[in-house]
Image 1 (cartoon, rainbow, N blue to C red):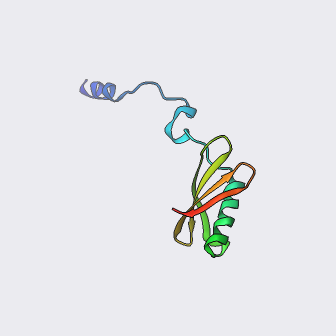
Image 2: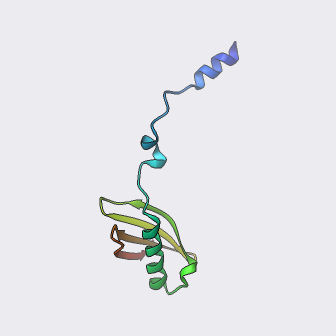
Image 3: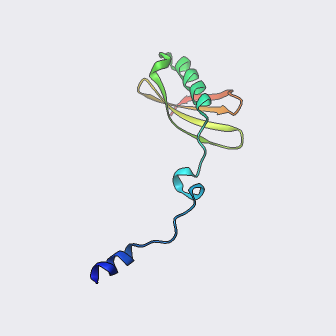
Length: 92
């Protein structure tokens, strides 16, 4: 009987819809835009393109994305629009 009471105490409300879950609350940049940022960061940092990897990304507004990159051990931040125009590359 005590175990039933403990289990009842662990029950939570209904599961949120996938679009309401924290992990899916923002859009990531499309893969092609992440790769364009990686290429621009490689040129900016003067490192081989294969040594620059996107780490994370998020949509900033209706037309712009921010991509966080690892450029041969250094962190960089790239702002890119939906058309593939890089507007900013800087250390982060």
